[in-house]
Amino acid sequence: MNKQLFGIFCLVMSVLCSSCITNKDVVYLQDKGGTTVSDSLQIQALSKPYRVQVNDILSIDVKALDKELVEIFNPTSSSSNNNGRGSEQSLYFTGFTVDLHGNIEFPVLGELNVLGYTVEEIEAMVKRELLAQYFKETAQIFVTVKLAGLKYTTLGEISAGTRVIYRDRVNILEAIANAGDIRVTGDRKDVMIIRQYPQGQKIHHIDLTDINAMKSEFYYIQPNDIILVKPLKRKALGGGQTAVQNLTTIVSVFSVLVSTYFIIKSL
Image 1 (cartoon, rainbow, N blue to C red):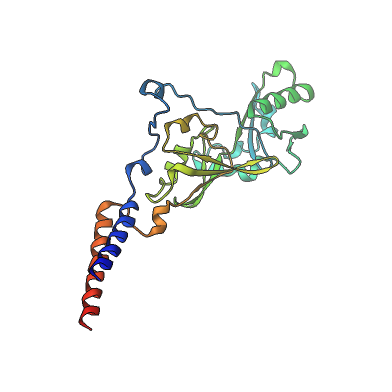
Image 2 (cartoon, rainbow, N blue to C red):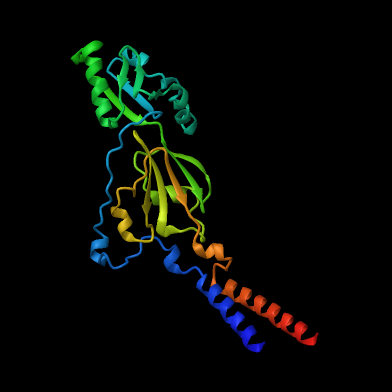
């Protein structure tokens, strides 16, 4: 019986010790041998220009020397004096939404197909059409096109929710920090990014514990991305997150085993 008790104790202890979460599981951007220290300082993240998709909301601002000439093109100008997030959220009602056919309805110009274009290309398109149909070259118009915020969703071992960041470029670490960081029990080595494409959605994977993640084309998030963080396998085992927690669990289990042994022996 002593051998059986000792065997069970050893088994439980080995399982719980192996379930301890280490620094390698939680530290971001570690040098895992693929780069040198000098190389690490020169890593350039790959960031492809974002191309507009269905349901995106665009903010299009037209400026000219004569402000009265462009008022019809700027439906959000009335809220521009409300400095703060409220005026930006109002773009949901006053911005230009890309419909299922990839079009926006722009004053005077009518329907413009913007699906698959970058914001810079849309700026050039709008300016070209305005000069061709409405303005003269002497009007000296200036067109600015921006996405109405970068919206993304987080799920899993991270605070769940949908958030909007009002910037043109946001990397995945900034997005995660904005959501309150990944929990200790989250798997940083295999973070899933569900990304929307014209053909549908695709799932991509990125290891945030590896410094080479900065070279990934998925390091920068895109509008409507879903960031999904899976739990570590250690969490499923029910072990503690630290060595102290594991030791406490081991002592508790051992105490139960010893008590059970003496109860059975006294029968």
